Image (cartoon, one colour):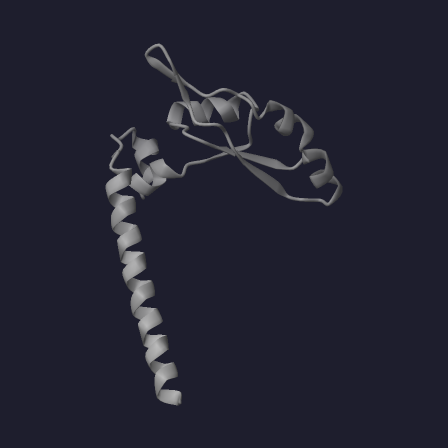
Length: 123
């Protein structure tokens, strides 16, 4: 798949690493993306449970060009700054995500009801 992407001049490939596994007391990322990384010639972006140290190591060793942070970024909207100053990270992803989803659903429901009321008055 990655070799075919090269033929089309795709600029980047964003892949999700399988979730980190716990080996003893340490979490480790199984580097299963090596074959795809080696085959793809554009910018390679890896995601999947990286912390600051894991992300820096993945980039410095050439495993990936960039690291995407999903859940960690949801819990810490100022993640780049926190990484920069080595600040503690929030781990309340579930609470923030739940609150955000509820707000989104409320907004969509209001929008839907508003649209439906406009349709009802047109007939």
